Image 1 (cartoon, one colour):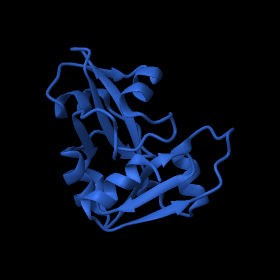
Image 2 (tube, one colour):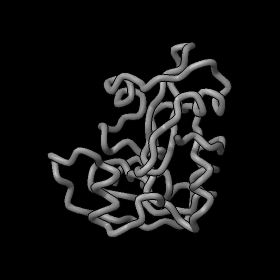
Image 3 (cartoon, helix red, strand yellow):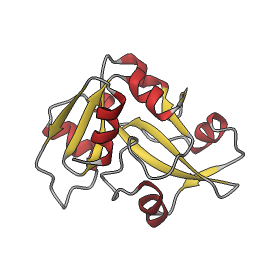
Image 4 (tube, one colour):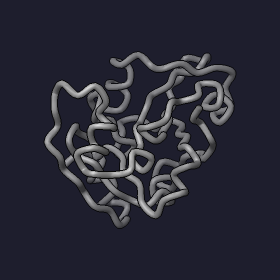
Length: 155
């Protein structure tokens, strides 16, 4: 049981867990999940940690088949500039390892922005807190639980 699954249970939301055999040599964890679970990659979302020009961390959630627009993320987060966070800072802040970072159950409360394309689906998939485990939930529940802003943050 991961902190992400515990957070979903505690919130009382409807969700489903999907496990798949993770390949340690996979180059893209999200694309691996989409392929092995036979899902539309636009419906599987990755969780990225950003650092603002103010040296504060934030979370961006976007489809695995899209690239993040750092400028759009900065606008959505009301900061001048964002860059990708240092991987060790991301792991330390969230309590998860890269490739298993879930937006749910993170150790620290951070600002969140989720790509507006999440609302195109009745349910989306995000990491459930470890490589090889996805949690399926409604985008509305994810937005609510993360107190996320919704904006177009992809290129």
